[in-house]
Image (cartoon, rainbow, N blue to C red; front, top):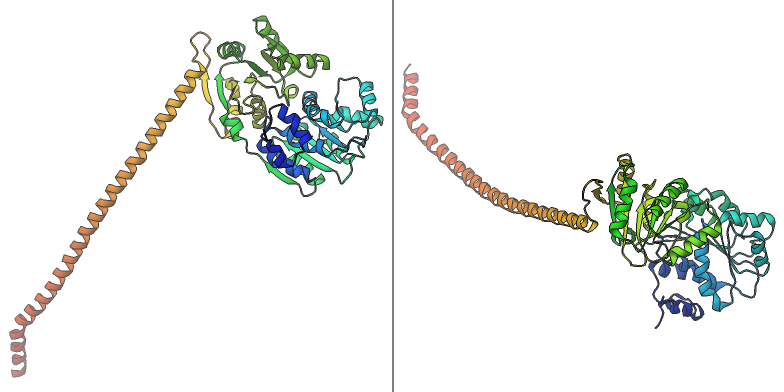
Length: 461
């Protein structure tokens, strides 16, 4: 099977392992980004998670590596350990046949082991900012040979407070290096960063409405804080997701909810920043292998997770902003699959919910959780909403038809009235003309004798 990646300039040695994975057709971000990256130009690429950003920058990077040079030539910065590991896994699949060495550098690992591997000569390093800074300060790694630098999930690095560290790292790379930035959103802080460090960047924007609004069904379950846990368990039982992520705002809430779900017999575990790296990796491995059905996580811990088969995202705590909402629900509905995003909203969340709806330009379907009564199923809810939309559409069409018919009638009536008015004016003109003519003659006729008589009398006098 011929791969379309060849048409983008990717060499056969890289295309072959892609083909073995069943990947022959580039995603939109890959199609737009790869040729530009191969040319060595700076890139600002905006696309949602799950659109194939990793291969968009990784394939050109691996193709341009000089394997005879043992220094670090490409550096990819990621905001979390999980994302760094994920990128590394994908990179190693492709690099295996190229004799290119790839290393993940992140906190929680044995530093001495990382140092030992770096001494062996690493061509590509995928790192979190904190651990990379540690190596730079120790002098166990340098960036003087880096000619390709990627900031992945740049907006999240800004949110997590890594902006100063990222700038410090950028300054440690050569000025003539290629800088590529990939992000779901481009906030002001990131835009300012690109203005300072990029040279005539090519901007690529992949519209994500399809990913966010069409491939993912969205539902709001209106409840109270007191009944939220019960509502979540009800929806999980009703939906029976293959794999699901439940998002909580804090580590404490993650642990409390995870313990409650396990107590009720759900296949569940937690993911947050206070866990050891070994525990985090164990949980993620079990989740990827579907040995866990439900992962309860904080936003930061779950950032960048790309696991096939996530069918549901539950927002146990409502996101703080629109970008957070989009990032969360982007865990499902990936690679053309359908997904379901369910958000639990208490009365105090109304303003946040309205902000999200304005941000995605869509009213989200809502149901109310009733602990004592029957709760409408999601299928029934969406069928009801579809019926309502159809009724509104028919009503609008009927209204427009009536308006058009009334408009035609009024137009015809107007033309008829105008015609009558014209005929009336015409008759009035004729009558006026006739009256003027008749009166003038009659007046002369009546006035004539009197006039002559009066003249005679005056003359006699």
